[in-house]
Length: 278
Image (cartoon, rainbow, N blue to C red; front, side):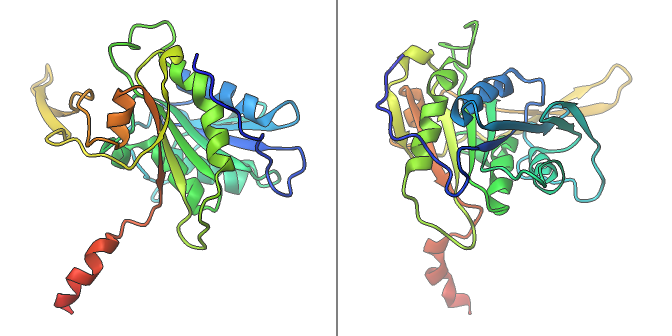
């Protein structure tokens, strides 16, 4: 395993020695990636901290920042500090902050570890990022974490080796960074671990979101035995690198990517050019 130099241990301001970490994901409460994240969070929180889980009862991959605005969701306690909700990752964050943890608000929200990458355009569809985005909109530090899959890890006993080996250290580095503050759209972070074994991770790269050309989603029709027509959403191969230096490109080179994000979707570079329409 690559030994990364350790920065000072993160201390939550004005919280004493207690660090409460809220976990969610989009693969569901029984997903192996969530168990990996629980181990990472336990290392971060330490013996005096608390790890809370509010995760979807069923898989919610691809729901992005969806919330259950038009119907209620059932929520059930599965164990100490562990809850399952019939909703999206963003729903789970809302449930935690405004119901489950009203007497013990989190210091940090972590979403993942997703089975598969959320680099490049995948970030726009990701329920994992949706959970982190909702955490940021609610005013909390929030980080989404995903494990890139590929031939080098798919058949390993633990395909989450890179996330397991580097997760806690990457989060510490993010939390210790001096980042610009905002009273409006707060930063959240998209972390993608490379598709290599844990001992082959080369390091960390701060990278912008990339774009895979001609790699969008599509649909494939199928007929049921009863003759009804169904459409399966299809993806695309994930081993195509993006522009050099962007997230998927550095992941495929063996690096953990860290991408700072905000929920503001405005293209600020186009504002002046568009003023001709006023």
